[in-house]
Length: 345
Ligand SMILES: Nc1ncnc2c1ncn2[C@@H]1O[C@H](COP(=O)(O)OP(=O)(O)OP(=O)(O)O)[C@@H](O)[C@H]1O
Ligand SMILES: [Mg+2]
Image 1 (cartoon, helix red, strand yellow):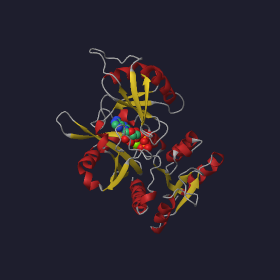
Image 2: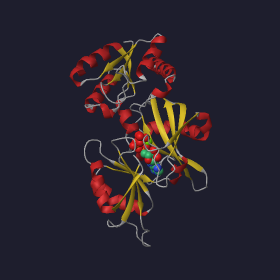
Image 3: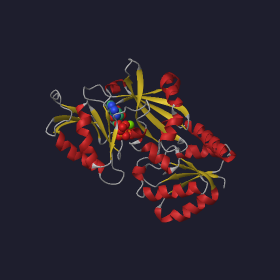
Image 4: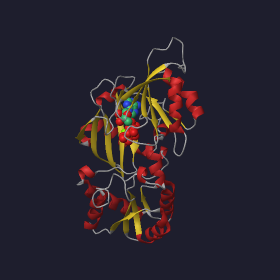
């Protein structure tokens, strides 16, 4: 009952020469240096029961380090984690926390907070998309976000090419629109109706949905990623989109420029966000905060002309820190603190 188990999965582009993610063994070693037994298990569906029993009998906690994109049997993996948590193993994080924080519709669950604009929507059916999106677009530029995929794939900025006629509250399906994809900032022109048919692929199938939020023009000043260990801000990455006129993307392969800052340099954002963490956890299902997670913000201006920070997305399934491995020691301390707190309860 005393080990900390790190779950990984074999294969995928996130692995180093030793077959593990680059940040896994540093965490294992940092725990071992502190007298805590730790090991890595590769999840395989064929060994599911064997793994479950071993972890149930030997582990105090697990740390999930699997990128869902690398996992063929995500549902079965999450079921196993859910059962482990139910038997008392401490989940870092609980699988439903991974789902709640990681899914794009987390934004919609937070839209009554100051972190998310009220006119942010999630479409789970084509009918909802057809009913609402042409009205939302009539109010201004939008960003449509698919739930699956990453690095800006299927994230589209949508603008009207011509202004609507006075008194029009629904964009006609034959209106010309300009669509820019965050993956590489490339531009396509379509009629609204055709583009909406193209977007149906994002809604159908497992975990399909589209989130629709206002386009925030101050993205030009950069996206601000807060890297968190549970409730502790650790560092900030400022991601400034490329300079070209249409560039709005801060994603990895989009040409954006990354700068590393300390949380102290962003104290208004950080203090404001920490003050809302209790509300966020409760709106997202009441799970414990993930061990390692990120929240991304974009600047906006409120009705009094003051800066506000709008949440663009959160990630918690498998946030890496391979480029800053010295963080492994802080992560190990955090794991031990979490185990200690849970044991006291
Ligand atoms: N509401 C918005 N207004 C302006 N730009 C936005 C908005 N939402 C997202 N973006 C831009 O689009 C990019 C991609 O969006 P998002 O981060 O939601 O997608 P992703 O594919 O999950 O990316 P990641 O690789 O960060 O996981 C952001 O980095 C940001 O530059
Ligand atoms: Mg992002």
